[in-house]
Length: 80
Image (tube, rainbow, N blue to C red; front, side, top):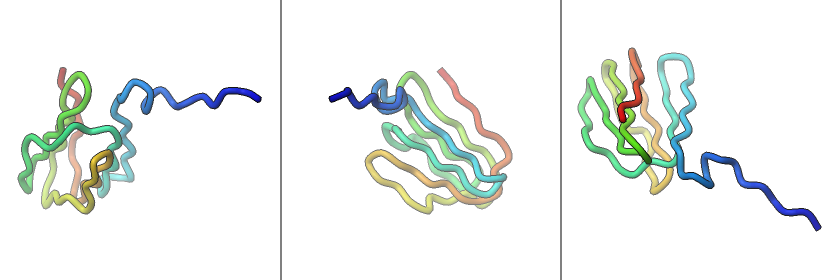
């Protein structure tokens, strides 16, 4: 029987980001929210922070591992 290989994002707890147009962002493997405002959301991740800027940003869903941010997303950055 072969071994099951885990995706690197899970094994190393690295962030995984999926951006759907400029209206929704899905993030896996976060470590918590640092800042939540209508124009900016900062999320702590392994090794840095994900910075999301835009208009009318809201948290559609948040769990221990996942976050959905909705609104008019203008910029996404990763800061170490």
